[in-house]
Image (cartoon, rainbow, N blue to C red; front, top):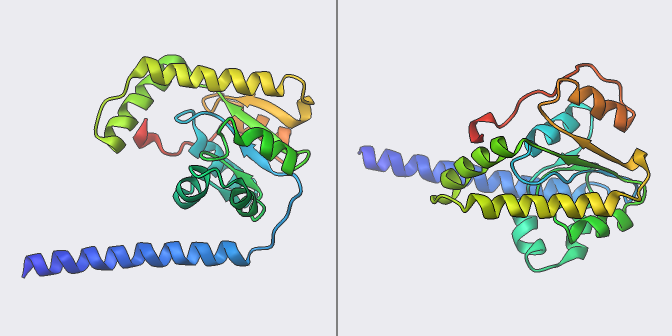
Length: 205
């Protein structure tokens, strides 16, 4: 009997997840497209992208974070037109696929005068977070030095790409900065109601 109850609960949970996915797809489909400027968080993984995304929501933006369907179905197959069509439905973004090096120039061109936010993190903190997250999610320990090399390569691309952009369109932040949220709000022309960033997703650090 206990096994039957357990299986039933699993089915109900799966059904709820499927309903959520379907509702999200329908909601996005019927949302009006807009190709005006957007806000993109292009910090590398494990730099506080979740915190930045939630902060954007707190400032009133319709934000899209990591979307597994968009990433796997469209980004991995390089179907950029579908990604851009989805992007036009929201106002701000964090995480994959928007932080990818090949996406940034496309986003910059498609959505003129957009704001780009790059996140930095202390090397030791990043390595610890990346190490723990990889084991938790993938079940194995990562090559830390290879991961840090990828982080630095991403950073170099971003800094090189934006070195000739107007300062009003690009900012570097750290979610540990005690005035970080205030700087974000100022950069976006929003009124700030707190100084530091709130903390999200700490369990994966």
